[in-house]
Image (cartoon, rainbow, N blue to C red; front, side, top):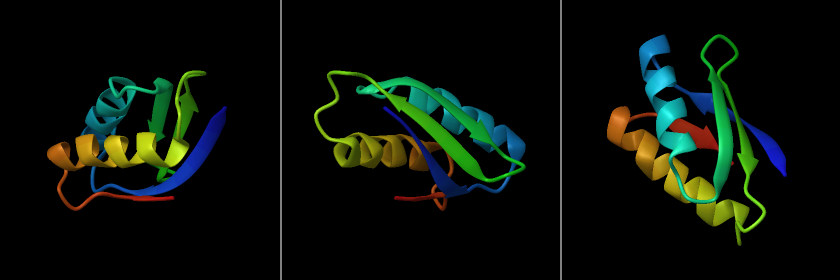
Length: 73
């Protein structure tokens, strides 16, 4: 399953780092962050039990890069 989320990120470099952090999160097959549109597209793995739990982990990983970033779920 693939979903797109509105995000709030301050710079293109942080968006790139957030993309990498999201890709490394368990339950995520792939992730892309578009700084210009302020959107993150996440493809969940088939074994992901809960999309909401996966996105909580993605947000936690992204906040290590940019503490004030936001992902609207």
